Length: 310
Image (cartoon, rainbow, N blue to C red; front, side, top):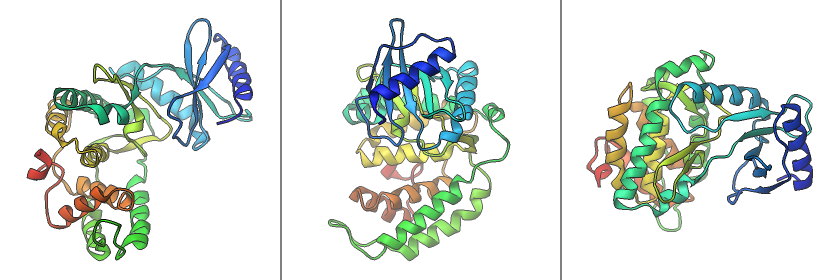
């Protein structure tokens, strides 16, 4: 996080240059665990979110355009992106509308029973809308190479963990994992769900109401390209798995498939993404090892195995 006095000064310069009310104070957001520090800025008229886009500063204009364009045409809780820094600015700032809610990861941790199902249904509704193929017109036609990047990252992780037991589980079978991924690589030439895709979409990219258990914000628009919507679905199943929240998975899939243009179903692409995410989390969470083993045993996760319905 930059010095707060300096950040406030730069924020006000950017606001004033765009004809927006300036602020008297700002404070870092409660959860500061992010590559791009965020602060809430307070004016007499409104609150802003100020994001220091350190990780991908070259995407400022792109994220402003995509987020606002999608916000205008889709019923999604996307914050209005008011303005961003220009080339030569001292800080790569994006100034956005403040939205209520807590990070989805913290709300998910507390959700049980009907609350969990309501939260999963709300997220599924957002993703089904986000994945509508008409939205692909908002980004260049060339699709991103996210699957290739993920494959490379996974192979590097395999070199570090294969054959080395974690503190509670057995060793990872690196050869079997590599064969699993390589068998599914040809399918990655075509998306299972042609749609917009965020490169790092995860639970931190959403806000949720901690009492109403509905999604209140969709955040982080730095890297939006054409891609495969099944990646986000695989990742959400993975998060439910790690958090012992699979009771919400059936509601999620039923809601998504009721609303989506292209239904989510078992396919090589989703198995590829799920295996990659599990391998990358192998050292940090022992439950990931169980998921790797089940996939290697032929369980049709996340859609067709009984394990996904428990």
